[in-house]
Image (tube, rainbow, N blue to C red; front, side, top):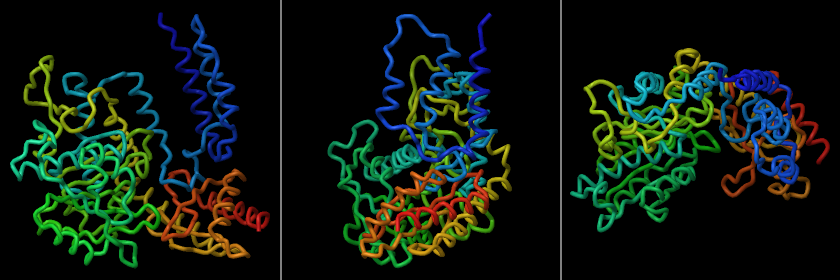
Length: 464
């Protein structure tokens, strides 16, 4: 009989760790030399007992992890997995399904199909849009912009999937100054090159300036063009004016893509969806599942208005495929991967556990707590609010007596992480060093905000 003792043992230790996250230091404690010294053992000739391997792995690494899944991680926009999502993810590892085609795993294909429909509903996107479940927003950009590439070149008589980019007209990609680096990587992967990106200035509110967009579009009216808009700036949470941008871009035949890595989830909240007015008019959208939906890594979602363009850009077949009988959805035709986890099952389980109201509550509560945290920091001596809370983002800096505010802000941010109660990251915004505040975890409470404010006050008293 197969011995599954290690599975039950690992599950028990994982559950205990999950329960302890509220009380563990948020910053990693172990140094690189310490971790390497523990883990860099000689590879054994004979296998080691699995229970021992798991126990030593936990003991050797636990203080080398950042508590990003806990309630006081306020650095990057990283959510914390819910128990239901983790359980579904564990099941998928045990079920060991390759969710590439329907015939390989019918249940996984159907769960993904249903989850995609639910996601469009929650995110306020067109019900007939196509979707692909991918590893994260990075590959969601790639998937959506592959559809854009196909569409723009097809309109110009180029079969890019057959002939590649050789001899094809250069595509330009217009973004605001607030674009995310994951978008640039997707553009590079698609063969456009980072040099195809044309950044336009932002307005005083941190949104793409529509006069600047109009000027950029008019400068080369015949060029195949993608306009990339932001649903939630990484620093300030600002969202671009979607109605005006779509009017300008579509009048020139441009494809409009939305980076909604976290901000697209505002549409899940009836109280906050007005922040994204008009976002549904775009041609494609990308977002993450490990943020607001609180899924384990790696989960992201791509959506494309024109399903035919999406399918044409990515679809493929092989002689060993079982001919389809007209039912079921082959996931490989909608995302860049072949061998892949059945991540649709995890999204399905999480959405069922939460429901529409649960997802909305996650969004509303994180936004409320962000406001409390930013305002509370702003009341501390020597802390200045640079960008008030919008969505779940905000910025502060720390004022130095000698006027060296940038260096002091970095120093204080580092000291807060070292103190261990909370984790913040530094950034550069409008040429100034700032500390970013981002709340995106279902476990965060008012008590966590209070503990964090107390910790920051103690750090400021010590380093000032």
